Amino acid sequence: MKKIMLAAGIVSTVFFCSSFFSAPAPDNALSFKGAPSTKEQLGEVLFFEKKLSLDGTVSCASCHIPAHGFADTLPLSHGVFGRTGKRNSPSCANVSGRPYLFYDGRAATLEAQVSFPIEDHSEMGIPFTKALSRIAADKFYISCFKKIFNSKPTAENLRISIAAFERSLETSKTPFDRYMDGADSAISAAAIRGRAIFMGTKSKCFDCHFSPDFTGDEFRNIGLFDGGKLNDSGRYLISHNKEDIGKFKVPGLRNVAVTAPYMHNGMFKTLREVIEYYDDPYRFVPNPVNSDSLLLHPLRLTENEKSDLEVFLLTLTDDRFTKNLKRAN
Ligand code: HEC
Ligand code: HEC
Image: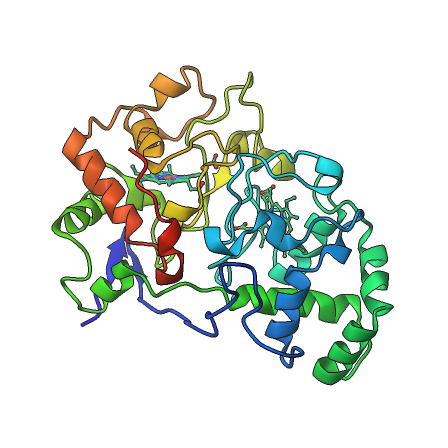
C-alpha cells in the first residue's frame, strides 16, 4: 500500500519516474557502451565533456559528482584555472520537478540553466557560443547530433540533451521509498521514529521540506544571512524585494547523506551539524536578518530525537550511492 504524505492542505501523491537511472556509474564511466543513440545518452556524454570549459579542465561532473548524488564534496567548487565559486554545488539529481533552479531561482528550466555554469567566470568560464562552436566542430558530435536530432549541433539541441540527461537522474530506489511502498521492515525502528519527528510539529522540518523530493520549492530564510560574514542575500539578488533578503530555495533532501557539505555556502560538514543548527540556530548565527518565524525558538530536540532524525535522513539515499553513505558522528 502506498503511504501518502499530507502537509498543510497539500496532498503529495507518491509518484516517481525511475526512468533510466542506471547511469552513470559512480566511477564516472558512462552508463552505456558505444556511441550515444538517445538525447539522454548524448546529454550524459556532454555532462562529462571538459571542452565545454575555457581551459578544458572542467565538466559538469567535476562539480556534480555522480558518486556523491551529483553534488560536490567541497564547500565551494573549483572551476577553470582553479577559480573558487561563491556557492556550494547542490545535487543536480531529482531536478525534473523543480519549477526553478539555483539557490536564488534565477533559471526557470533545465534547458535555460545549461548556459549559466558554462558562462560563469568561476565555473566553466567560456561564452556559450564558443563552447557550442567547439562541439559543432567536433566530428564525433556532428555525427551524434545528426543521428539523434537530424541536425548539426545547435544551442537548442545541446540544451535539450543535457536537460534530458538531468531529467533521467530521478532517484527512487531508497529504503524510504520501499517503506512508503509498503515494505514495513525496509527502514529501522529508529528511522520510523525519525520520520515522525521530521513530519511533526516539534521539528517543523516538513513545513518546508515536503513533497516526494522533500522540498516545497519555496524560498525561505533559515537565518544564514547576517549582513556581516554571512553576506549572500540569496533570492533578493534576483527579486530586489527586501522581504527576500537571506531567502534561499529549499533544497530537496534525496541523497542528502552523500551530498555534504551543506547549505548554500557549504558551512556544515555533517547532517548532525545541520540538525544541531536547526535545534538552536542562534547558537551558530546570533544576529540573523529576517529569519523565518518557524525558527524563532530553539526546538529542544532530545539527543535521541536528533539521532533518529539523522537515521531517517540516511534512508533517503539511493542504493547506488550507499557505499558513500556516512554517519559522521
Ligand atoms: C565549478 C562548479 C560547477 C560546474 C562546472 C557546474 N556546476 Fe552546476 N552548480 C554549481 C553551483 C555552485 C550551483 C549552485 C549555484 C547557485 O545556486 O547560485 C549549481 C547549480 C546547478 C543546478 C541547479 C540545481 C538546483 O536544484 O537548483 C543544476 C541543474 C546544475 N548546476 C547543472 C549543471 C550542469 C548541467 C553543468 C554543466 C553544463 C554544471 N552544472 C556545471 C557548480 C557547478
Ligand atoms: C523555514 C523553512 C525550513 C525549515 C523549517 C527547515 N528547513 Fe531545511 N532548509 C531550508 C532552506 C531554505 C535550506 C537551504 C538554506 C541554505 O542553503 O542557505 C535548507 C537546507 C537544509 C539542508 C541542507 C541541504 C543541502 O543539500 O545543503 C538539510 C539537510 C535540511 N535543510 C534539513 C532540515 C531538517 C532536518 C529540518 C528540521 C529539523 C529542516 N531542514 C527544517 C528550509 C527549511
